[in-house]
Each structure stands twice: as C-alpha cells, then as structure tokens.
Length: 175
Image (cartoon, rainbow, N blue to C red; front, side, top):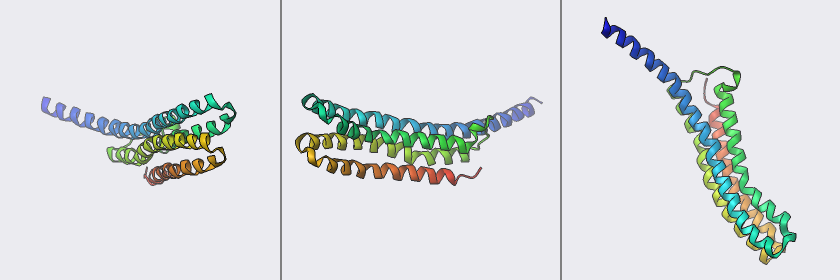
C-alpha cells in the first residue's frame, strides 16, 4: 500500500514539476530578454556618457549632439522589454491566471528569448564604444558628427535583427 501511495505522490509531483518547470523556463527566458539588454544599455550609455562629459567640459554647447550619441545604446534595453512583454503576453500571464506550460513549451520560450537577451547585451556595449568614438569625432571635427551617427546605426542593425529573431520565434510557439 505504501508503494502505491508513493508512486501516486511521485506522479503528482512530476506533474506539478512539469507545469511549474515549463513556466519557470519560459519566465527565465523572458526575464533574460529584459535584463541582459538592460545591463548592456546601462553599460553602453555609461561608456558614451563618460566620453561625453569630457567633451562637455570643454564645449557645453555640444550637449544636444552628445546626448543623442549617448542615448543610442539605450535602445537595446527597450527592445528587450518589448520581447519580455510579448513573451509573457503569449504565455497567457496577463490573463489573470497562471498558465500551464510543458517543459517543451518552456524551453521554446527560453530559446526564443535568447537572441534578444544576448544580442541586446553585446550590441549595446559595442554601440556604446562606437558612440564614445563618435563623440571624439564631434570634438575634433564637429561638422562630421553625422558620420559617427551612421557608425552607431550600423551596430543598431544587429540589435534589430536580434529583436526580429526573438519576435518571430515567439510568434511561432504553439499554445
């Protein structure tokens, strides 16, 4: 009798683990999609901001252009938040009930969020470095500062590809 009760208890715990485990994996992926690009954006805007403060000590009139160059690496954090929101919406978390996701569905959400999580993290930091270099262009050749903007936008393209990859994968996860 105790063996049967133990087997029933084990089966129930595996069912609960499967439900909670799938949701946990999905939430981990969505959370990484929000947090890692946010960390990258904080780092990237910080790098650009450090370069900008040096220029602004010399020429405060360039504040508007410096601010534009500093803000650009912050877009990845926004893209990550969009993926997070879309993922939790597709999971059904906004319906007011806790969704039941299988481990397979949880893994699908987890891996669908990874392009934005990793692409956003690394591209924001790289873009911050490019923006810092662009601030150097602004300091030495103010008329050519738009060339630095083009260089920053080149890095932005890869953040957009990460966003697109994650969104297309999330859209194709079956409920």
